[in-house]
Image (cartoon, rainbow, N blue to C red; front, side, top):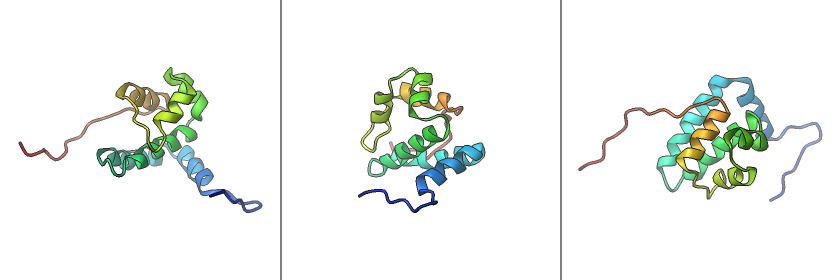
Length: 111
């Protein structure tokens, strides 16, 4: 599928990145909601795509990869729909975009 552009128009992705860049609060909530999908193997790609969008909004893939101390190619692979970033990569990327990982109480698995 090709991306069609309307003359003078803005793509959904460009608009989303611009809105996330304008509002740090929105970016945090957007990523918080999307990260919940990482718990679901059937929907894990949504969380990775959201993190990739945040990366684009807060510096771009090359700049964030450099700040995180990983190669741009490794960052693209980690945040692809089939990606599986390590905890170290996830924390480094979040730090590079000015966010951090936090924990909250969840449902306890039955013993």
